[in-house]
Image (tube, rainbow, N blue to C red):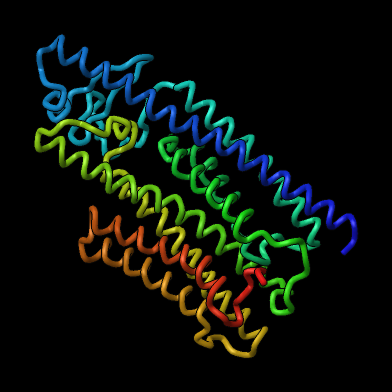
Length: 349
């Protein structure tokens, strides 16, 4: 290997380390935002309840808006708002721009720029696209997940997902560096094809979207439990969830994103079969990787079908979405590393 390749590989590892550090600080800022805002809103609730001599839970169940600092208006979990809209249709969880959230987003942008430098230098060092083994797939996948999250912020205020998405990105980078690190090297012959760019890039993008919906589904379960507790007159022990849309809004958004990701995964399966025919002379061979790629497709197809035609909504839909993502994780970790087959490209010896 030429010295320039080794040097670029070392620069890439340094950039990945810096990106992980920056994401970690961003994760702390997102968590701080949730904690700080929750404490502030709880104090506002207590003050408003004392002034009106109405229990906070009762006031919220009645659909009343509780005004907070800097123009913040608490949306009820259900029912009409003072502006004539509905909480289910309003995904903006805060009207004001909170300082911790602004810092967290800025750090995420800085982190993704450093991360991009790491991905690019890895590609230059390898002389190819940087997703030929588990280390490269995890680092590139984490990059795409954060990019998708930041792009989504342009259209919707999804900062409540920041703690979960950035946290997953940190986990992926740490796992790549600790468990799956692989030096810069050449691809195995079967991967030396333009289909690598087409097939894997779509798989990475689809996986990034599935990451977002996984976080939304997990939050949906927590929010549904919280709403049920409040409806029964219980205490609100998860105040930070007031910054998160209601369970129905999370479910609807997750369903729409899963629909797009499912289309991408369908193309992943199709292009993988075409690539297999060109590389090995058959479209399908029941290789472990092929089977699990199809299992993921079946799980998400079942999720979309059950929710659209069988009335599988609420927690059942959320659990199906989570199971689908767990299958994705299993496919790209356990299958790649521990199952022998034509797709054993982890890069580990």
